[in-house]
Length: 96
Image 1: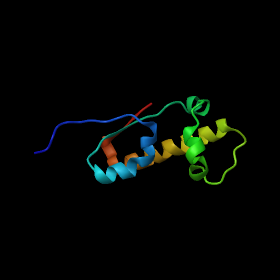
Image 2 (image 1 turned 180 degrees about the vertical axis):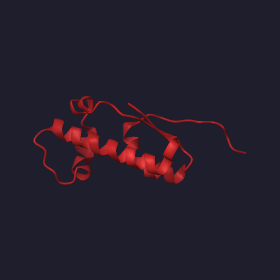
Image 3 (image 1 turned 60 degrees about the vertical axis):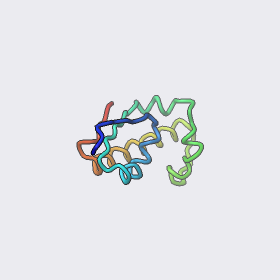
Image 4 (image 1 turned 60 degrees about the horizontal axis):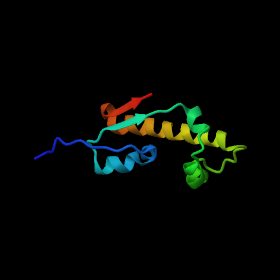
């Protein structure tokens, strides 16, 4: 018997794990909330940049954290959009 129960959670870093989640939950829905990149670039929250920036941004050296934060935001949103649309089709929802 299939359960009608739907659940979810909010974590901005989930966009990077979309293929992983899809592997285990191929019928899933994914809601991507796209913030204004300027808010992200100017945020004091630089956790992802500090922990994975060198890996996710290749070996680019950025003059300042704001530019690096914006580049990381752009890369993440682009990845989520392309991955979500190709894997989930109409079960991928984007809210701007």
